[in-house]
Length: 300
Image (cartoon, rainbow, N blue to C red; front, side, top):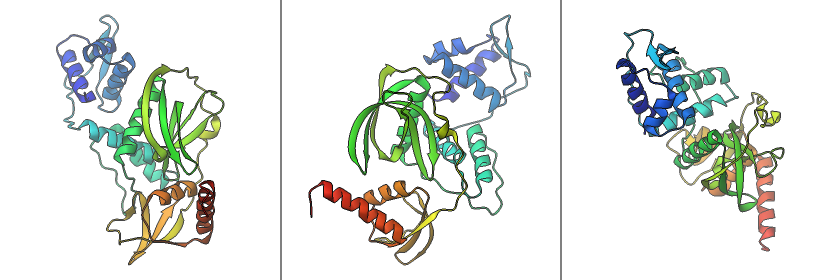
């Protein structure tokens, strides 16, 4: 059920003089007390509701009785997309990063206001349905401190493992989840695009405030993207090639921007293209990676 249903119920309870609180909201909709409190915070911060807690009645009322909820009609799917895009824009640390982070703040508030960006071109992120689903499931697991079972695929092959997710981050046009298998000190980051399947288990784990290693908190340097010259099977009709920005194109030749070399190489393994023309160092790196894979298969 959408949180707007819960918020409208909470609003009706206030107007009826019942002084609702997070406990009553949690019982009414069978959600956690923590989630109920987040709904109340959303009303106060994002919807600017003049909530006033009355200790005498152990519940809330409106300090300004003329307040009315804004008319927000947003499906749950739309909220998930906005949440994902806010996450991506918030972790964008490249060109025009200051302006982009303001857009992230705007999306997080879920208000109808428009951000004035002038003639600046903002980066475009693709909200892939599968990655969006994994992002939502992992975010839930992080909130509830639940272990997950992951089926993962990358250049090293496929594997399955249990995982304690700690934090979602984005770096160089790729999403990652930081976590560990058994030892909290042995934290690693895995890419969402490499995840084949996620299952949330009933097993929980303990989390310490300083549990995420400080190295993951370091801000990324602002840098310009690499550019790959690639001949595709057909001319792309949009400014993106499966999420990667197309800087320029001439017939079937496309100049594609990327930041993370490993992430882009993994993308090349699963995408259709005709020829990688440049840069030379990426060609050699790709040849070396493919050669290693062929060697493991015992092929000549």
